[in-house]
Length: 232
Length: 312
Image (cartoon, rainbow over all chains, first blue to last red; front, side):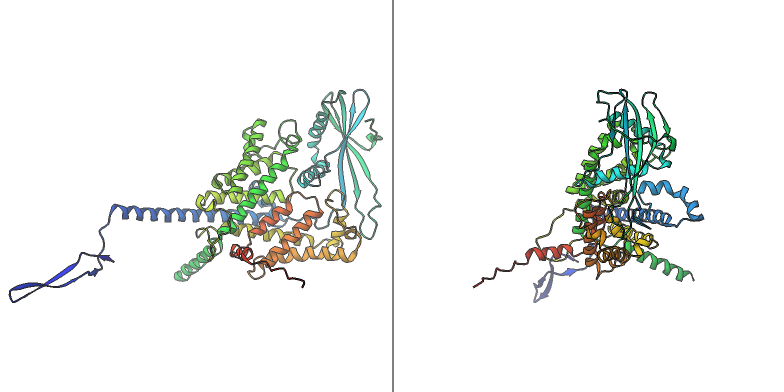
């Protein structure tokens, strides 16, 4: 709807021409396109195009994520064994492994700690254990707990030389040179109710020894166990 | 037959559009973005104390297996200087989300940084870290596909009344994915617990309370010994994990389900040393906030405090 110029009508009467109306008339007439209109139209089309592209790309992300989650949720079976090599790298990178079975099917049965005895060249020895006294920084204690619980397992033997070297380096400032590092796992069974929580038997096993002078390590057996004593 | 197929496809397309691309409240989005920024910032802070112990040369990190580092930027930038630079970048990127400035840059940076750092030492992380990684990755994609004007929406309660403003239509898919993920977390946690004897006979929470390595703040010894308290807390855990996936989706029960979930996770965080897990779960619950939350909060703010009653 656009307003046009005033439309004036005239009438001849007695040889005299008189104006009989003078009013604004509204007409439905298309306004000729201007450069501004073309620009606005183009902007709208561009925006619509962008939104469409966004919608398609968002749908692709949604489908991709849903497929990964579905693949991760397939129960252990021949199908999951086939799917694993295909999807596992992407599942790991996206953190979509869906391992939410916290404390399941049973809560903790055993509490495990890892510590080390460091032997110096002068015959003295010392003790190392991960920091655990962080009540307020819960994340720090949790990460060391995760590290302990995973490193102590036999299938994590690749971590043992690295852990031993790290522990040896922790004593680098000491005036004494580190000769050997012995890794020890200790564990207790959590008593089930109604047994009292105080009745705990602590077990220990020395599972790895690192020779810091020759930079070699060896797994320990039952015969290699020796009394644990620290001189400092 | 063809027209039937066409109408079926159109119906599916409409349903897809309705579910994934529903409008999302600007206030809810800003709340979630700020929460994600705050949690990632804290996550980076918690790495500081043991950064040298867990990452880089001479640390406890195992050399990644070949092929394991394809998404790890530090696999390509081998010097430890880049790791430290990555940590600084992490703080900056978290800040962009926290303050709602340059979110479009910060979001994708976090999406790349978190998996990269986590790949550097694979044996440190718990379920909370995995969930945070997923949230950051999805948010990174969301940032790439959403204009800055929406991403940088300020977190504030409007002073004027009326309908709560929404982000532009089509921006709801990120929240829908987070909601789906949260429902799966609870559902899987419940399903995996069901076969456990201790969960069924109601003593599981008593056993967890006895753990010395997980113990955090003070909990009464009754938690370890009293069967009534033990049974209630064990079966409440199971009941919440079984029902929250449904109650959180249903509009009428949603506010109560969110409140129950928050109390549940705060209680877990008080009792157990599990890092940021509880707070990341609470952040996930924020994705379920109803669209009128800001209006409700505003009405609370305006409600006059009751006048003190004179004793005479």
